[in-house]
Image (tube, rainbow, N blue to C red):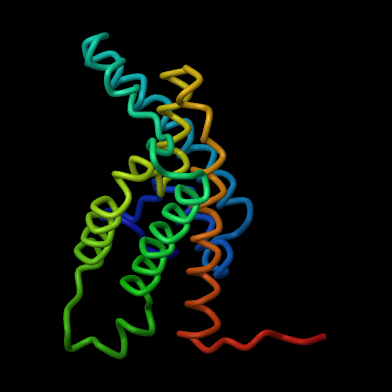
Length: 184
């Protein structure tokens, strides 16, 4: 089993998709994880709405992601692709069993580089998209907020992270791990 997160948890469908493409998760497990991640995000967004005042919740658009004024949908999509690539590639690098064996004299705590990557991605993408990089979180907020603004650009927060995750998986498997494509 691939280690992701402090307790081995998977909370991001884009990361799960990347791990599936890298053959670290089965299709059945990946689908199950993605469904559960989305259900958890919907419940979490509902809890947040329950604890926030109605006025503040509305002012913050329920935490729903959208492309900020002054940016194009292409800008938003690009930010989500690059941001998710950074996150998923960091997960691959920080949890690579071969790297851990090779660098066993240097203890590494995987949550540190992963958390730092998430922090840096947020700094770069909050002004553009509010930082999606997790389709489940974007979905949960959009469903609970349930206003047009939460749905207008929603596709970007699935397509961008899945493309970013696929590129990170491809880069890690083919370039870093040098696993050749098999021709038939």
